[in-house]
Image (tube, rainbow, N blue to C red; front, side, top):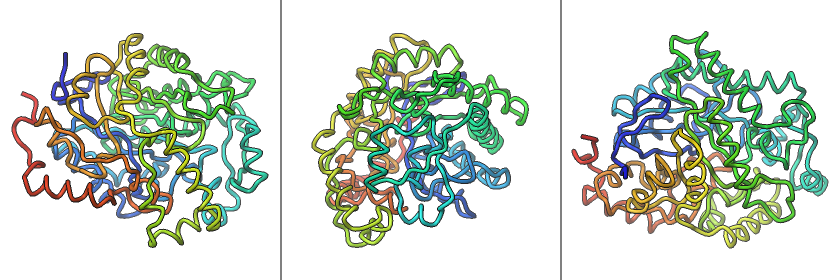
Amino acid sequence: MPTLRDPVEIGGLELKNRLYRAPLLECAGTNEDTADRLISALEPAAAAGAGLIFQGATIVRSEGGCAAPGMTRLADDAFVAGLEPVPDAIHDHGGRLFCQLAHGGLRSMEVWHDAYASDHPDLTQPAVSELPWQFRFLDRLGVLDFSPDVLTTAEVEDLAADFGRAAARAVDAGYDGIHLAGANMGILQQFLSPFYNRRSDRFADGVRFLEAIHDEIRERVSTETDRGAADLPIVTKVPSERPAPRIVRRRLTDDDAVAICERLESIGFDGLVPVRTSVTWDMSIVRGKYPKRSWSDPQFQDEYADAFGSRWQKRLVQAMNWLQARRFGSQPGWNADLARRVRERVDVPVLLEGGLREREQIDSLLGDACDLAGMARPFYAEPELPARLLSDPEAEAVCEDCNNCTVPQVTGASGQCRTPSVLERRGELERDGAYERRGSTETE
């Protein structure tokens, strides 16, 4: 059976080991210092030995579509060309860098972020279909503020082309592969999900939207860059909506997710990331403790009010966060059984993330439930975590799944650990030299 240190290929691209930094919110913006901020966020994982780094959700259009403040956009040729130092920094350490492409659709900031919506009153959200009744109800209550613009067939095709254009720009800048944000309530999940998708054209089959994006990426990389399209690895997340509330009758089951993965392999995707997520933004994707420290931190209170519209709405969101934490507690490798089912049915690499914290557990899942293993929030706590995981078979991430890193991101704050006990433990490891690179972290 393979271990975390063994090499693996995705779409013909060889990775020196099977550990990856899963997509996170870098909040690097779209300005003159974006490349430096991305390097600061991403390079430590590569320097510590991770074989694959995913740059977090990066928006394919110049307006709208951001699910959180400070997200980077790939809609301008000159700007993206200026990102060349980012993949160069990863390559200097023998790592590979994929860019995750995304659009928020109905999850965009203009729906939920009060101050942003006020500053951008003309923004609408590209919608797959008319709003589900649950969202219409929340809109009438004033909890959310939807301005949906149901996409025509031609507009869907143009959105797929924007994904292709963004991918070509990324490849020109030196990125090694493309990752599609197919879950976490973004526009791709909205096409796949029967909760959102009630179209009557050919895109009523949401897989056809991902197929259109795949074909646009292959075509544009082939014709607009110096790289052959066949050499470009394309991976995507694939959602199961099993965690959705009971009030949601139409949802993607685990069986649906497995079937979608089989179809995506036949289309030409080179890697699949099966994940369980709800139809709305909740703690099903960041399972763990209620982040009491972040909600009570005085430095964020005004920004929370700006984001949610008022202090009473902030308290409402906070209460929902508390309830969700009671439902979605920490569970090691919570997507493993779904990933195992997918791996039994496809011949491309299956990537697993969600609650992986221990090297011993990861090695037990490799070759069984997955081909690569990834972590997200633990990298906020330990940017150089791979140095420990790859050198010590008994290593365990210090992340406590407390989620104090995630809630402040609604204000545009950078992703970082804010929990004293975790920071204290990391300091102890630093003093002990646990993050120093050793020969054992390299593949022989």
